[in-house]
Image (cartoon, rainbow, N blue to C red; front, side, top):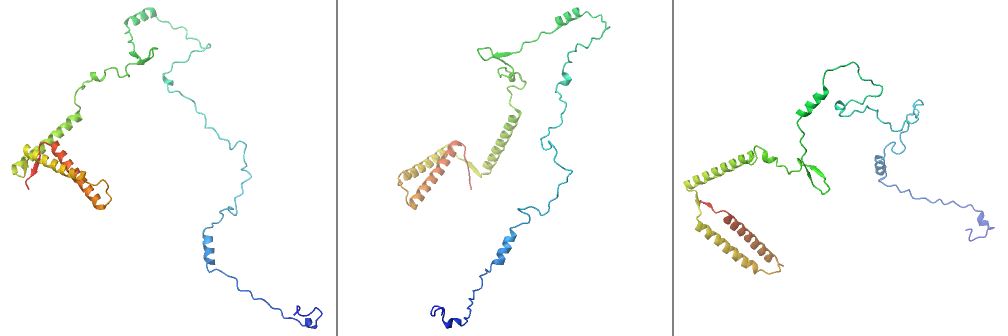
Length: 257
């Protein structure tokens, strides 16, 4: 109205009603309480600021000078390992020898007799390994035949004798078992002719499979080609194992049943 009429219009004297704008209610999430609970779970009391009340240090326990410096352990008297075997110390100038001791021993004669009867020392066996004369003890060099002088030198050790006995006993038990089975007719031994015939037949079969294997396609791009190649390889390996087994064993037994 004020825009339509001038400021001095009589219509401006009429009081106007105040229009109040109704705001919509504020949005509140339905997960508000759940978020509050989850936030409180991850918080702990006194985590960052420390406890609310701290024990005040006593004035009597003040920091002393040099109290935080590292302290060395207590000194212990040093003792050498050979204290009991060491020679006595050299007497000082204030130590006087014991006077008044007399002896009738003739030290000249006793020393002479002791040296005459003494066994001469044997020189230490050494070897020189350099041209400048560097010496090494011969005992620990491995050049001295010490093991040849042992009582059991050249004899078979006891554990080998025991093992040989066990091998012989096991072989004897196996031979007895084979003889018993042959006597009962449950097994028979292949002759040399049968063994050679069997060996030639296996080699012939291997040759035929090898000829087929050589005729395969170089490119195995299909499943049937791959399967056939793997089958031929497995059969050839089995024949090779059988041929090697028969060639290594001269005596072969087969069961009658």
